[in-house]
Image 1 (cartoon, rainbow, N blue to C red):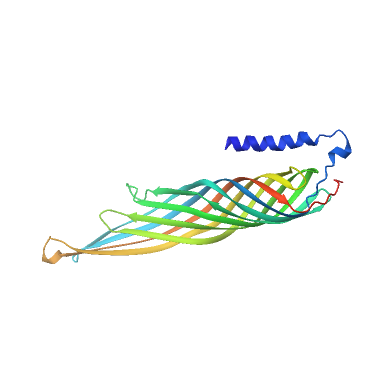
Image 2: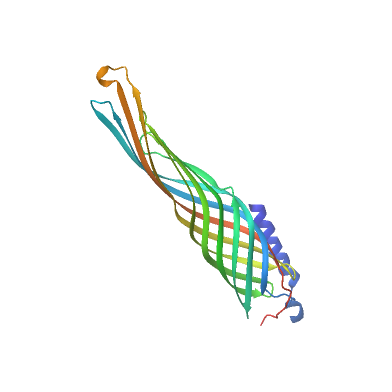
Length: 268
Protein backbone atom coordinates (compact mmCIF):
# COMPACT_ATOMS: atom_id res chain seq x y z
CA UNK A 1 0.00 0.00 0.00
CA UNK A 2 2.83 2.43 0.85
CA UNK A 3 4.44 1.61 -2.49
CA UNK A 4 1.25 2.42 -4.39
CA UNK A 5 0.90 5.75 -2.60
CA UNK A 6 4.57 6.59 -3.30
CA UNK A 7 4.20 5.84 -7.02
CA UNK A 8 1.02 7.87 -7.20
CA UNK A 9 2.61 10.91 -5.53
CA UNK A 10 5.62 10.58 -7.83
CA UNK A 11 3.38 10.51 -10.93
CA UNK A 12 1.45 13.62 -9.87
CA UNK A 13 4.55 15.55 -8.83
CA UNK A 14 6.42 14.58 -12.03
CA UNK A 15 3.53 15.86 -14.11
CA UNK A 16 3.52 19.15 -12.20
CA UNK A 17 7.26 19.64 -12.76
CA UNK A 18 6.84 18.85 -16.43
CA UNK A 19 4.26 21.62 -16.77
CA UNK A 20 6.39 24.33 -15.22
CA UNK A 21 5.40 27.96 -15.58
CA UNK A 22 8.11 29.65 -17.65
CA UNK A 23 5.46 31.44 -19.69
CA UNK A 24 1.73 31.46 -20.32
CA UNK A 25 2.01 29.35 -23.48
CA UNK A 26 3.73 26.50 -21.60
CA UNK A 27 1.30 26.71 -18.69
CA UNK A 28 -1.78 26.33 -20.89
CA UNK A 29 -1.08 22.81 -22.14
CA UNK A 30 -3.32 21.60 -25.00
CA UNK A 31 -5.88 19.69 -22.97
CA UNK A 32 -9.59 19.92 -22.22
CA UNK A 33 -11.49 17.81 -19.72
CA UNK A 34 -14.76 17.84 -21.67
CA UNK A 35 -15.80 14.53 -23.20
CA UNK A 36 -16.41 10.83 -22.80
CA UNK A 37 -13.84 8.67 -21.02
CA UNK A 38 -13.36 5.03 -20.00
CA UNK A 39 -10.90 3.54 -17.58
CA UNK A 40 -9.79 0.92 -15.09
CA UNK A 41 -9.21 1.24 -11.37
CA UNK A 42 -8.25 -0.78 -8.36
CA UNK A 43 -7.61 -0.41 -4.68
CA UNK A 44 -8.28 -1.65 -1.18
CA UNK A 45 -11.41 -1.61 0.97
CA UNK A 46 -11.85 -1.60 4.74
CA UNK A 47 -15.37 -2.89 5.37
CA UNK A 48 -17.31 -3.31 8.61
CA UNK A 49 -20.33 -5.56 9.19
CA UNK A 50 -21.96 -5.26 12.64
CA UNK A 51 -24.13 -8.33 13.35
CA UNK A 52 -26.88 -8.80 15.93
CA UNK A 53 -28.35 -12.21 16.80
CA UNK A 54 -31.10 -13.57 19.03
CA UNK A 55 -31.06 -17.33 19.72
CA UNK A 56 -33.23 -19.63 21.83
CA UNK A 57 -33.33 -23.39 22.29
CA UNK A 58 -35.68 -25.71 24.21
CA UNK A 59 -35.24 -29.31 25.35
CA UNK A 60 -38.51 -31.18 25.88
CA UNK A 61 -38.35 -34.64 27.49
CA UNK A 62 -42.07 -35.23 27.59
CA UNK A 63 -42.23 -34.68 31.37
CA UNK A 64 -40.51 -31.32 31.55
CA UNK A 65 -39.03 -28.67 29.32
CA UNK A 66 -36.04 -26.46 29.86
CA UNK A 67 -34.42 -23.98 27.57
CA UNK A 68 -31.85 -21.28 27.10
CA UNK A 69 -31.77 -18.01 25.18
CA UNK A 70 -28.94 -15.72 24.17
CA UNK A 71 -28.39 -12.45 22.31
CA UNK A 72 -25.19 -10.84 21.18
CA UNK A 73 -23.46 -8.44 18.81
CA UNK A 74 -20.11 -8.37 17.06
CA UNK A 75 -18.46 -6.59 14.13
CA UNK A 76 -16.60 -8.35 11.33
CA UNK A 77 -13.86 -6.57 9.36
CA UNK A 78 -14.18 -7.20 5.62
CA UNK A 79 -10.81 -6.09 4.23
CA UNK A 80 -9.53 -6.90 0.77
CA UNK A 81 -8.45 -5.82 -2.71
CA UNK A 82 -10.77 -4.99 -5.58
CA UNK A 83 -10.58 -3.94 -9.23
CA UNK A 84 -12.85 -3.06 -12.12
CA UNK A 85 -13.75 -0.53 -14.80
CA UNK A 86 -15.45 2.82 -15.17
CA UNK A 87 -17.07 5.08 -17.78
CA UNK A 88 -18.09 8.71 -17.48
CA UNK A 89 -18.56 12.09 -19.12
CA UNK A 90 -17.25 15.53 -18.12
CA UNK A 91 -18.42 19.05 -18.92
CA UNK A 92 -16.38 22.18 -18.24
CA UNK A 93 -17.44 25.72 -17.36
CA UNK A 94 -14.46 28.00 -16.70
CA UNK A 95 -12.53 26.46 -13.82
CA UNK A 96 -15.42 24.17 -12.84
CA UNK A 97 -15.89 20.60 -14.04
CA UNK A 98 -19.04 18.55 -13.57
CA UNK A 99 -20.03 15.13 -14.85
CA UNK A 100 -21.48 11.68 -14.27
CA UNK A 101 -19.65 8.39 -13.76
CA UNK A 102 -20.48 4.74 -13.22
CA UNK A 103 -18.18 1.89 -12.25
CA UNK A 104 -18.26 -1.81 -11.37
CA UNK A 105 -15.80 -3.66 -9.12
CA UNK A 106 -15.03 -7.29 -8.31
CA UNK A 107 -13.75 -7.63 -4.76
CA UNK A 108 -12.10 -10.12 -2.40
CA UNK A 109 -13.38 -8.46 0.77
CA UNK A 110 -14.46 -10.98 3.40
CA UNK A 111 -14.37 -11.44 7.15
CA UNK A 112 -15.89 -13.22 10.14
CA UNK A 113 -16.66 -12.67 13.80
CA UNK A 114 -17.61 -14.64 16.88
CA UNK A 115 -20.51 -13.38 18.98
CA UNK A 116 -20.04 -14.32 22.63
CA UNK A 117 -23.71 -14.59 23.52
CA UNK A 118 -22.96 -16.95 26.41
CA UNK A 119 -19.80 -17.70 28.42
CA UNK A 120 -18.67 -19.67 25.37
CA UNK A 121 -18.59 -18.09 21.90
CA UNK A 122 -21.23 -20.18 20.18
CA UNK A 123 -22.20 -17.87 17.32
CA UNK A 124 -20.12 -17.51 14.14
CA UNK A 125 -20.86 -14.92 11.45
CA UNK A 126 -19.16 -15.00 8.01
CA UNK A 127 -19.55 -12.20 5.46
CA UNK A 128 -18.32 -11.84 1.88
CA UNK A 129 -18.68 -8.87 -0.48
CA UNK A 130 -18.69 -10.37 -4.00
CA UNK A 131 -18.95 -7.16 -6.03
CA UNK A 132 -20.16 -3.57 -5.90
CA UNK A 133 -20.90 -0.72 -8.28
CA UNK A 134 -21.75 2.97 -8.19
CA UNK A 135 -23.56 5.64 -10.19
CA UNK A 136 -22.27 9.07 -9.14
CA UNK A 137 -22.10 12.73 -10.04
CA UNK A 138 -18.79 14.61 -9.82
CA UNK A 139 -18.04 18.30 -9.23
CA UNK A 140 -14.49 19.55 -9.47
CA UNK A 141 -12.34 22.68 -9.54
CA UNK A 142 -9.31 23.10 -11.81
CA UNK A 143 -6.08 23.79 -9.93
CA UNK A 144 -4.33 24.27 -13.28
CA UNK A 145 -5.18 23.12 -16.83
CA UNK A 146 -4.10 19.55 -16.05
CA UNK A 147 -5.21 18.96 -12.44
CA UNK A 148 -8.48 19.20 -10.55
CA UNK A 149 -9.90 18.34 -7.14
CA UNK A 150 -13.43 16.95 -6.98
CA UNK A 151 -16.16 15.67 -4.73
CA UNK A 152 -18.42 12.83 -5.78
CA UNK A 153 -21.50 11.01 -4.52
CA UNK A 154 -24.58 9.06 -5.48
CA UNK A 155 -25.97 5.53 -5.65
CA UNK A 156 -24.07 2.43 -4.51
CA UNK A 157 -25.06 -1.22 -4.77
CA UNK A 158 -23.38 -4.49 -3.90
CA UNK A 159 -23.88 -8.22 -3.39
CA UNK A 160 -23.09 -9.76 0.00
CA UNK A 161 -23.25 -13.32 1.31
CA UNK A 162 -23.82 -13.75 5.04
CA UNK A 163 -23.77 -17.06 6.93
CA UNK A 164 -24.53 -17.50 10.63
CA UNK A 165 -24.16 -20.60 12.79
CA UNK A 166 -25.48 -20.62 16.37
CA UNK A 167 -25.71 -23.31 19.03
CA UNK A 168 -25.88 -23.63 22.80
CA UNK A 169 -24.73 -27.16 23.73
CA UNK A 170 -26.37 -29.60 24.27
CA UNK A 171 -29.20 -27.96 22.33
CA UNK A 172 -29.68 -28.00 18.60
CA UNK A 173 -27.72 -25.76 16.24
CA UNK A 174 -29.24 -23.24 13.83
CA UNK A 175 -27.64 -22.17 10.55
CA UNK A 176 -28.87 -19.04 8.80
CA UNK A 177 -27.86 -17.81 5.35
CA UNK A 178 -28.73 -14.62 3.52
CA UNK A 179 -27.45 -13.58 0.09
CA UNK A 180 -28.73 -10.44 -1.56
CA UNK A 181 -27.98 -7.41 -3.69
CA UNK A 182 -28.48 -4.23 -1.70
CA UNK A 183 -28.60 -0.55 -2.71
CA UNK A 184 -27.25 2.29 -0.61
CA UNK A 185 -25.25 5.49 -0.97
CA UNK A 186 -21.65 6.57 -1.48
CA UNK A 187 -19.70 9.81 -1.08
CA UNK A 188 -16.06 10.80 -1.47
CA UNK A 189 -13.40 13.03 -2.99
CA UNK A 190 -10.40 12.74 -5.26
CA UNK A 191 -7.62 14.33 -7.28
CA UNK A 192 -7.21 13.74 -11.02
CA UNK A 193 -4.37 14.79 -13.32
CA UNK A 194 -3.87 14.66 -17.08
CA UNK A 195 -0.78 12.77 -18.21
CA UNK A 196 -1.09 13.86 -21.86
CA UNK A 197 -3.85 14.87 -24.27
CA UNK A 198 -5.94 11.75 -23.57
CA UNK A 199 -4.73 9.86 -20.48
CA UNK A 200 -5.50 10.82 -16.88
CA UNK A 201 -4.51 9.42 -13.49
CA UNK A 202 -6.55 9.75 -10.31
CA UNK A 203 -6.53 8.97 -6.60
CA UNK A 204 -9.87 8.66 -4.80
CA UNK A 205 -11.35 8.03 -1.36
CA UNK A 206 -14.97 6.84 -0.96
CA UNK A 207 -17.27 5.95 1.92
CA UNK A 208 -20.05 3.46 1.08
CA UNK A 209 -23.08 2.47 3.17
CA UNK A 210 -25.32 -0.40 2.01
CA UNK A 211 -27.52 -0.37 5.13
CA UNK A 212 -29.00 -3.66 6.40
CA UNK A 213 -27.54 -6.34 4.17
CA UNK A 214 -28.73 -9.49 5.97
CA UNK A 215 -31.91 -10.32 7.81
CA UNK A 216 -32.80 -13.96 8.30
CA UNK A 217 -34.51 -16.34 10.69
CA UNK A 218 -34.56 -20.09 11.01
CA UNK A 219 -35.37 -23.01 13.27
CA UNK A 220 -34.51 -26.66 13.68
CA UNK A 221 -35.94 -29.60 15.62
CA UNK A 222 -34.14 -32.79 16.61
CA UNK A 223 -35.78 -35.88 18.12
CA UNK A 224 -33.98 -38.89 19.53
CA UNK A 225 -34.48 -41.75 22.00
CA UNK A 226 -33.21 -41.66 25.54
CA UNK A 227 -32.35 -44.73 27.67
CA UNK A 228 -33.68 -42.95 30.77
CA UNK A 229 -36.91 -44.99 30.86
CA UNK A 230 -40.22 -45.51 29.13
CA UNK A 231 -41.55 -42.19 30.41
CA UNK A 232 -38.65 -40.25 28.97
CA UNK A 233 -37.78 -42.26 25.91
CA UNK A 234 -38.10 -39.31 23.53
CA UNK A 235 -36.23 -36.02 23.74
CA UNK A 236 -37.10 -33.15 21.38
CA UNK A 237 -34.64 -30.32 20.90
CA UNK A 238 -36.04 -27.13 19.29
CA UNK A 239 -33.93 -24.12 18.37
CA UNK A 240 -34.63 -20.87 16.53
CA UNK A 241 -32.82 -17.65 15.83
CA UNK A 242 -32.90 -14.41 13.86
CA UNK A 243 -30.04 -12.21 12.72
CA UNK A 244 -29.46 -8.75 11.29
CA UNK A 245 -26.28 -7.35 9.74
CA UNK A 246 -25.34 -4.04 8.13
CA UNK A 247 -22.36 -3.06 5.97
CA UNK A 248 -20.19 0.03 5.47
CA UNK A 249 -16.95 0.32 3.52
CA UNK A 250 -14.03 2.76 3.32
CA UNK A 251 -12.40 2.65 -0.11
CA UNK A 252 -9.11 3.95 -1.47
CA UNK A 253 -8.40 3.42 -5.16
CA UNK A 254 -6.35 4.71 -8.08
CA UNK A 255 -7.59 4.83 -11.66
CA UNK A 256 -6.28 5.31 -15.18
CA UNK A 257 -8.68 6.74 -17.79
CA UNK A 258 -8.65 7.45 -21.52
CA UNK A 259 -10.60 10.48 -22.76
CA UNK A 260 -11.74 10.26 -26.40
CA UNK A 261 -12.14 13.99 -27.15
CA UNK A 262 -9.08 15.99 -28.18
CA UNK A 263 -10.41 19.55 -28.10
CA UNK A 264 -8.61 22.26 -26.14
CA UNK A 265 -9.97 25.17 -24.15
CA UNK A 266 -7.51 27.50 -22.34
CA UNK A 267 -7.91 27.98 -18.62
CA UNK A 268 -9.64 31.31 -17.94
